[in-house]
Length: 125
Image (cartoon, rainbow, N blue to C red; front, side):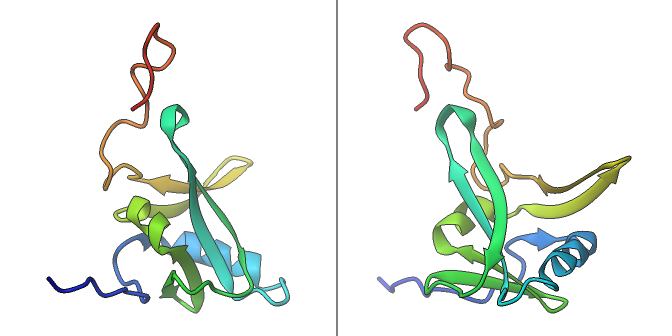
């Protein structure tokens, strides 16, 4: 059986809207030593997964990179498993502005909640 090839250059595994790319570029252009943005996944269990972003100075050996309009977006290989099919957008509603992760359950399925949490004898699998 052939071993799976590590794919460091991403193409269409996740989508980033032009508005989100524009905002990411604006965030990084005045940061010295920043090479791009890392998208990460944390949590799990009853609270569900949390998605976030941070600045990247140096990529890690197991990072995958998506380059779009000069912006480098890094995702480690484990997080990519939870992010495939996700679209990252940037929305403005009145004074509120935020990055929005859409379709976060495309790969894993489910509704993002745990029906048994809080129930007597229940728990998250």
